Length: 502
Ligand code: MTE
Ligand code: MO
Image (cartoon, rainbow, N blue to C red; front, side, top):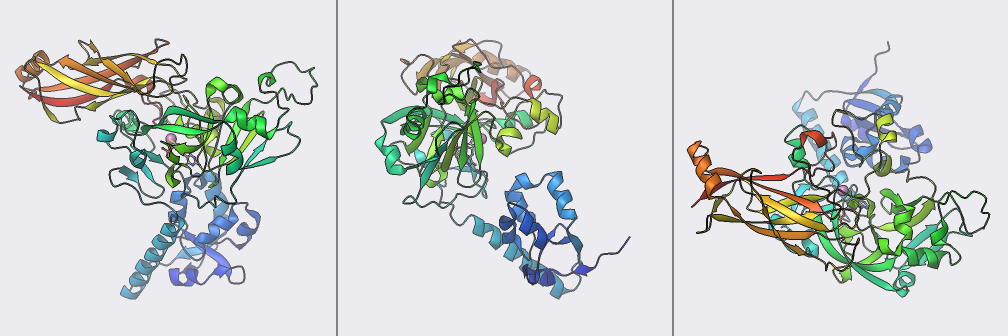
């Protein structure tokens, strides 16, 4: 085998143009990607790493870290990095590291300043939980609404911003301005957004999962305003028959009817994408919004300014931010986040294959879930003179199903109290309960604390909650039966250990 030459990082740094050759490093490999940049559709993005390491960029654009991409890159290998031996070489490497870091931060130059109360799990891209104290409000204040970004926050010019709307049977693609969308009837709805990974940490503690370790704060609720997606589709294509799509009747040659439309694709300006089933999008009762306001104010940058989809009752991953296009299709979105993420698997599928992903169903409506917000885990709490402990938290289900009941226990699930419920939105909308319900209960704890003391457990008791929705769906008792490698849909009984004083 030929022995490839070694290069210093300083040498690599002089190769940043097609004339000099565009070089990058990856791990200790040196690659000449000049030709790759020409042929690869996303090639220009990789130019941000010209002359330096692509590792930090790949950490951000993690979807490129597939084995295929690595293999492809290997074909461009020209050498490897010389190890730094002398103090000068080490200093030069440190300087190169600093430049890499700066270049990476440059990608996030448009990211907004964030409220320090947010609990940051990852800074670039931003992933931050709503702090526990703020989760008790029916409507989450916008500055502390959880943030889940896969990529940098894009810079958008509201003057030139257009929403593209298209479908196989549309006479042409339509572009709608913000003014066009504001001219449609304004619809307001209170919706809880919950990340598929909310409470992943509870799952991870039973067996390792891959993903950010969200506790119970990957969820928030806002009042969203905008145009109904049904109105947007009608505005874009006045002859479009929303009620008569996706039927099995192949003989119908009405030109407005494409019998195959089954999905609606949403695309974000920065490259994120997802889709929802057409029947959800087409139903006015589905209340899917093209939203321009959150809690009565224009959308802030982190939450999709100037436009986002809001898909009530579905996993938040489908509520695409910085919405740039709505496209009808017979297929689900090709996006990584639709096809290769946000799916559930059998607990024994330790490492889902491409085939597993292809055959699994995308998460859309979420299952019933709940969490204790107070008392906090590992805290010391005082029982009341009545020997009871005050417990509060939230419960929410998917698909517009109302929370029917929340059961709370302070003895690990041996005895239960049905909590008082405080829905964030009035209960007068059957099948359209899109927002969470807070619950409060006073739960007998004295006996459990005394028993724990007798066992020399130091009066540690386990507070538990579990909710029931209007279809009588309830939460699984244990994590083991629902564990999945990506740690999504983590909705086992929520358990919080506390020490009780009397
Ligand atoms: N839309 C775009 N364009 N880019 C994203 O990274 N993240 C999705 C969804 N929409 C995302 C997106 C995911 S996984 C979640 S949980 C929600 O946005 C989070 O919405 P929030 O940041 O407003 O809380
Ligand atoms: Mo998410």
